[in-house]
Length: 478
Image 1 (tube, rainbow, N blue to C red):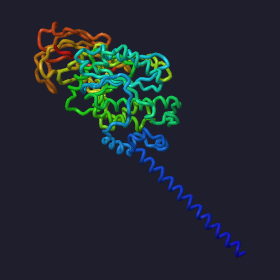
Image 2 (cartoon, helix red, strand yellow):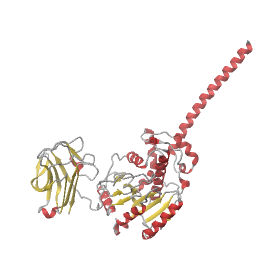
Image 3 (cartoon, rainbow, N blue to C red):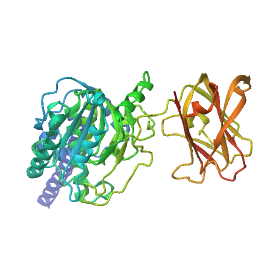
Image 4 (cartoon, rainbow, N blue to C red):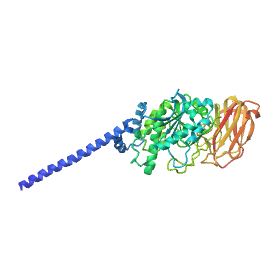
């Protein structure tokens, strides 16, 4: 009996030791996982190069909008150095000087169609001789198929040799050995494995492109490889940048599609490159860019109209699927963007929420929205100084609300400003014309009106049941 109790006591001790070991093991594993997560957040260049860091990436479960992530993102301020990648120069001459704008393109082999040459051609053909002096184009041939790259380089050098010699066109490739693991990644959004691989690699493609372009110019604009440009797009971009002098911005958008026409300060490119690498497997690049902008304290999208770049590809680079997306705000001749001189705006219409009158006069993608207007309602613009108007264009309604247009209205211009509460107004008006299908456009206004214009007025000539969106008011001065 004694031996039995002894043996029972020994087994109880052993059992306790096993439980202790289990608890210790669980605690140790918990600490290990936390440590690995912590290390993943602070990894910089080396994680791209070392395959054994893949386990760390797989253990990371942080969400982009988490508080912990926001604090970590602030450390990206220190990521000012270049990512350690040795690029292959496929076609280039030494960069003679820093330019005003770098245009970045990343391209891979498509199963159907190829638009890269047309995109490069559009960039150069739509730029004047003076504008060409201020731009450089960097093409990242990001496909691992060497035969395809060699063929593309041959085509590019044959068609654009003089631009390469002039230092305006550089073709590069980041070798495959610098890429992180692209197989077996997290399948966020229930995407199929090949889709996850495609979009994850694309994030790295763009990161390496941004990294290369960080010191080539003052500003950087990203295009896709199937884009058509508006004429003199550089001059239009310069005009917008000048108009925003003294204001804070991270990203300006000159197209509403994908990763097309997104403009950055070049000093932000290293951080953006690191950001894309850090979260390359989480989501598509255009979604990541929204987070990047927000985390750098630009809350709202700043998009300009008309759009300067248009998607022209019919087949996507992913599996050759159809992609018919078009930007309906694109204009081929966008060089002559409106001046919209300083003015005060006033309306007696019933404004809906915060869609106030001033938003119709902005070049940013905003608009005025009012409840159904009645006969005699007005929307008035009073200029700070009398102006000579060359052209006027007013657009109502949107693509989503095509019936919220001005069904019956006219446009007047006036002179002789006097003070009426709550704002200044003109005493006399001259009618320029009627709205047609919700729009008004007139050129050579200065030849039709003999006086300098103090005011412009949209006048509702008949009550309507529909609400009214004034999408944009554009004025060109002579």
